[in-house]
Every structure is written in C-alpha cells, then in structure tokens.
Length: 435
Image (cartoon, rainbow, N blue to C red; front, side, top):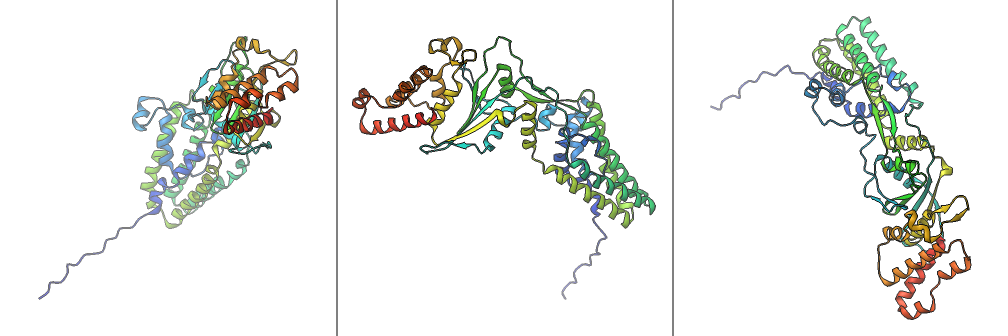
C-alpha cells in the first residue's frame, strides 16, 4: 500500500511592502543630498517623507566626529568636501614654463578645468591632419571669491510637490484616525527636514594658494594626452587652479549630524514596527508619499555634479568666454609650436618679447617645453627643434628671416636622406601653420 504524503498546513505569512520601504530609494536620496550646498533654499526644502532613511542615516552618520558616532556609523574618516565628491579627483600633469617644475598630478580644480576645456568645440586650424590636438588658452583673473554663495535653481518650486504630498497624506491619515501611519509620515517629514537643514548648513569655500608678491608669472600648461590647457597669469591665480580645492566647513554642526543620522535610523525601525499595524488606506497613503518623494529625489540625483562644479569654478575664478579660447590642430607638432609661442615671455611695458639672453634669468626653457610634448631625439627632430628655438629668438626681428627658418637649407639638403628630408619638410610646414 503506498503511503499518503504528509499533510502540510499552509502558512499565513505575508510580506508587508511598507515594512521594507526604509531601504527603498536610498541611492537616489543620497545622490540628491550631495548637491544640497550648491543651491539656495535647498536646505529649507527637505520637509517631505523621503525614502531610504536607513541608507542616508548610515551614509551621513560617518560625517559626525566623535567616538560615539564612529561606533554607530563606522566608515572612513573623510573630509566633508571629499565626502560630497567636491574633492578627490586627480588632475592632469602640469608643467610650469618659467621654473620648469612639473606636477605629475594636480588637484580637483585642475581636473574640472581640463574636463571643461575638453567639452569646448574650439576653432579648427587648417593644415595637415594626423591626430587632432586641442589647445585651450586661459587667461586667469585676479582675486577669486573665497566663500561661494549658493545659487538659485528651478528645483525650489518642484520641491513643493513632495512637501505637499507628504503633508496631505499625513493629514488624510489623521482624518481617518490611522495614528500609526500618521505618526510615521510625520516622523519622516520631521527627520528629513531637520537632516536637510543640518547637512546643508555647511559653508562652501574655495581654498586657493597664496604666493609671494615678487613671484614670477605662473604660466604653464596642463597636459592630458591630446588635450592641452595653457594657463597664463599670476603665480597665485594659476596655483589656485593647479593646487586649490573646495572645502566644506561644518563647525559646529558635527554633533547635530550624528543626531540627525540616528533619527533617520530610528525612523526605519518605527516603520518596520508601526506601519504593519495601520489600516490599508493609511499604508496606501504612506506609500504614495514615498512614491512622490522618490520621484523628486530621482529628479535631483539626475543633476550632473561635475557640470555644476565646472560652472561653479568658472564663476568663482571670474572666467568668461573672452578669457578662454580653444584651437584644434591637426598634428602634435603644430600644437607644440603654438604652445611654445604662447608661453614665450613678453615685456608688457615695451610690448616686445623678452630677449633670448634673458630667458635663463626668467627660468624660461622652451627646449624643455618642446620635449614635454615630443621627446624624440633623432637628428631630424633635433634639427626641427633648433629651428623652432631660433624662430623664437628672432620673433621680434625680420619676419622674412623667421619664415626662412621654416625651410630646409643647403646643408640640411646634403645631410639628410630623402625620407628624412620629407619628414623635416612636413614638420616645418606644421610649425609654419602654428606661427
């Protein structure tokens, strides 16, 4: 006789979606919070029942500086600017044209400046094309702002939607006497509003680099592959771009950040315990407030943080379109000669270029600049390099002499073979286009 299968009584388990709602939308909420310092009134517009309280609390609790909060919210002890992705990106190589000093890696501001210049369309220069090189000239401006005021944005009016939805759903829960859902929506409004106010209260500043009054001009170039940025101006203004950074000052708000983060974590625990006790209508209202708030956070997280910072740095450094000019050259050699000519020191009083015998006193080494672009040291390249240097030495003299240097002379005709002569002619033609 076959045995009958054992009878298993079906369970009564059910998953309450609102019980795990505190984990939903955390990434969007964190991303939305990371741009709060850039915009005016943003810190005052956080009074809505935002999802992702657990993620936000655990994330921003790491900002609080004390042993107690470090124990509750473990994680790396980062500076606030890095925490909000306002710092930490590695910038391109920088070569100073006067001192010859080289920074293999610059800071976050130089990274932003390079990214901005890469986006420029630029003016195409006619000539031979092998691989295009983009050169942007930036004339730095004095006295950058140090404390950065927040800007206006259209999101202020959009914030009224989640705020209105949260208060209306909260009121409807109270009207139907569903005090469990009423209290949880109200707690979400209060915790999110206080957290936005506290976290958004930092002062955003631009930390520059001070230089001596007698320091020479800080002319130099940022180099990132085929993208070159020439920085022309005073040492301090150029150093602000290469070594400056954004900073966020939170004193004396660190303890308050810890309390707000703890409140956000408590909010999740309350939701897990109390929302299942509510009625279906109240739970539906709770989820509706979450849905509208999540959509608003998604809208805020869609903002391009790097674009915001690029626009910010241009405004704070007083850089406008007339201070920036981009050219696109067809070859590396044309870009090299153009960069050398632009970095050549000039006498502002006499409106002439400084004589070659004074280059060493000024620390200007054009040969080193050329080698940073093109380190080739064959006979053809050495001859080409010497011709370029001679053109720079005679730049204020006869133009016919300068143009003559862009031609192969009789001695070079006999010294080089057909292939080398062809290459030298091409290189000199590229240089003539830049000149």
